[in-house]
Length: 81
Image 1 (cartoon, rainbow, N blue to C red):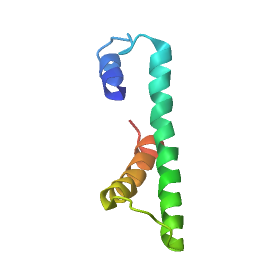
Image 2: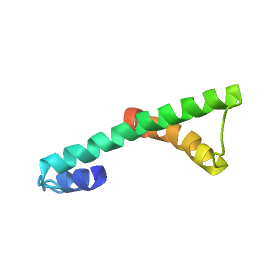
Image 3: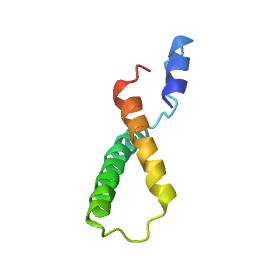
Image 4: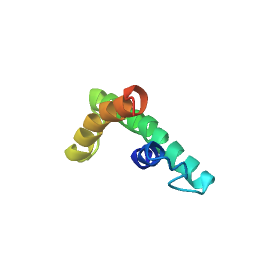
């Protein structure tokens, strides 16, 4: 959505990609909320692993979350798009 907005503004079109502002705001909040939920999941999983109380958790789920967390943090807080 960000790329579509910026591409339109560069061409002189200042209309919103999603003209319904509450929907656009909800999508932005969900994007930022995903970072914090992922952080909570990773911290809780590491604590459970350290205590030896982890139940059957698919290994791929932990690996994907560990890879995506730094990507999410970089994209939302440090990228200059």
